[in-house]
Image 1: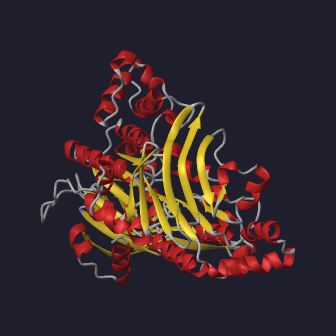
Image 2: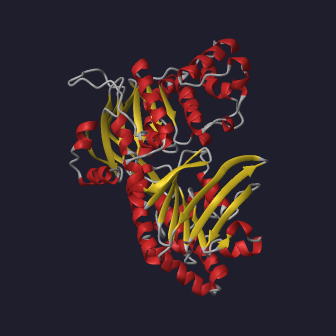
Image 3: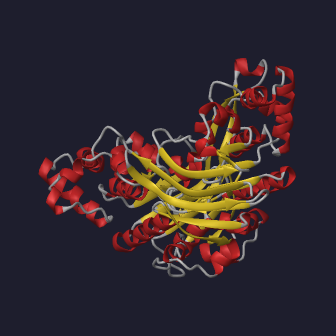
Length: 531
C-alpha cells in the first residue's frame, strides 16, 4: 500500500471541515476525489503535506509506513516535491511570473537531485519534451505569460515530475482548459503515470474526466466521504443520494425551440467580419512597420430574437475576440449590427451609451468581474445610475431587490437590507454568477453575451445557472451569444451554433443537427472529445 489515510480530520479555529475520512491508494493506481466546491477534497489532499495555512490536522496518513502527519517540518520538506508532487489548478497563479519555466523546473532538480545548473537546464528541456510541448528548448526560455494555457499546464506537470515522485496530487488539472486540451492532458497524465509507475490522486468535479481517467473514485460531501469504489461500479450503481445527484447534474435542454422558416429581424448580424491585432515584425522590418495577426476572418452569422447562438472552439480560435467585437470593445472591418445599430455609426452619432444598454455581458469568472470594493446593491444598481439617472435611490433599490429575487437571490426578511450591503467575497461561486447575471439584466438588454458563464462552476451549480438562463430567456425573450468550449452546454442551450478554428468559421447550422452529425473533421474532434 502506497498511501493509507485513516481518520483524517481538518479544522480551522476549532471548526471541523473534514470529518474523519479514510481512503487508500496503491502504487500505480489512479484515485479520483470528487465533490462540489466546499466539499473538502482540496483541503484533504493538501493537508496530507500540511500545505494548508492555520489548519488543525488530525488522524494518520501513512506513506509506505511513514506517517506524514507526524513528521517534522524538516523531514516533510524532503517529501514534498520529491516523493509527493502537486499539479495545481491554475498554472498562471502557481508559476512564478519572474522566472522562465526552464529555470523553475531546473530549480527543483538542483534542490532535490543536486544537479549542476547546466545539468538542470538540460534535464528541464528533456522533461518538457516528455510532456509533448512543442519546441521544448525554446519554451524552456519562455516566461509563463508567453505560453498558452495548455503549455503552462504541461510545464507544471514537467515540474511535478522533475524528481520522479511516487505520488502525484493533481488538483483540478484541466478545469481551465478546453475539451481537446483536456483530452490531451488526460492522455499525457495516463502515459506518464504508466511510464513512471506513480500513483495519482486526482481532485476534480468533472465526472466525464473521472470516467475516462480514474481506476477508483471517492465521493466527498461537506467534509464526509460518502461513497467510494471502482469507477464503473459507482457510476453504474451509485448507492448514496449525493452521488446520484452529481451523476444526474448533466445540463438539460429546456428552451423554446425555433420555428423553421422564422423571418424575424436578427438581433445580431455579422457579414465578412474581420478583426486583427497589430504585431511587431522580427528584425529590422519591425523598426519601420507593424504586422497583423488576424483573430477573426470573414465571419458570417446571425442571431434571432429569443434564441441562442453558440460559438464553440478551442482556446485561441477567436471566440472571445468575436465577443469583444460584438460588445463594441474592439475595432473591426466588415458589417456588424447589434440590435439594429452599427457600432461605428453609434460612435459617429453619439449613441454609444444607448447601444450599450441593449447589449450586456456575463463573464467567465464572476469573482474577478465583480468589484470587491462595491456592495451588491451598488454592483447590481450601477447600470441604472448610468442608463436611468432619473431614478432616485429608493427606486433603484426596489429594482435591485426585485431583480435579485428573479435570479434566485432572496434576502432574509429579518435582516432588512443588510444582505444588500454584503460584498462579492461573501457569496459562493454560483451566487456570484447570479449576481453577474442580475447586473447585466438590470438595464433590460436585448442581447446577452455569455462568455464561458459556467466553466468555473461545479456540475450541480452549472445546471442551476443554465436552468436560470433558460427561464430568463423564455420569460424575457432574451437573445444569447454563448461563447463556450463545453459541448454539453451548447447541446442544452443553443438553437444555432458556429464552430471556430484559427479565426475562421469552419461549420455552422442548427445546433442539434450539427452536434448529431458534424461534417467538418474539427467539429467531429470536438464532439468526440466531449463524449
